[in-house]
Length: 116
Ligand SMILES: C[C@H](O)[C@H](O)[C@H]1CNC2=NC(N)=NC(=O)C2=N1
Image (cartoon, rainbow, N blue to C red):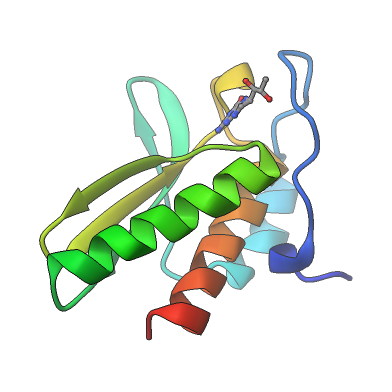
């Protein structure tokens, strides 16, 4: 099976199917450290990345933003001194879609290839 980080996001609409529990269990090992949590009634994937300063944190934030624009799927990004909190969910369905797992894996790939 193609690794999550190499997959593309599919176009989403309000009719898109949320990810199933079985798919979550199958895919979760590919995104270590990502938590599934509920905020304001919506399930999200969330991870905090650590950096040595603000400059690298904002550079990472921008790199994730570039990838989001390429894929047409956008995160919430909170940039602070020494850390960036990344949250993925699918606005169109107010929940988790496979796209969020693809983007979480791509976010890890950006961190691993350019920032660690
Ligand atoms: C028209 C455009 O493709 C949509 O509004 C996209 C943009 N980026 C998006 N990002 C996320 N995370 N969820 C969406 O439903 C979404 N929709």
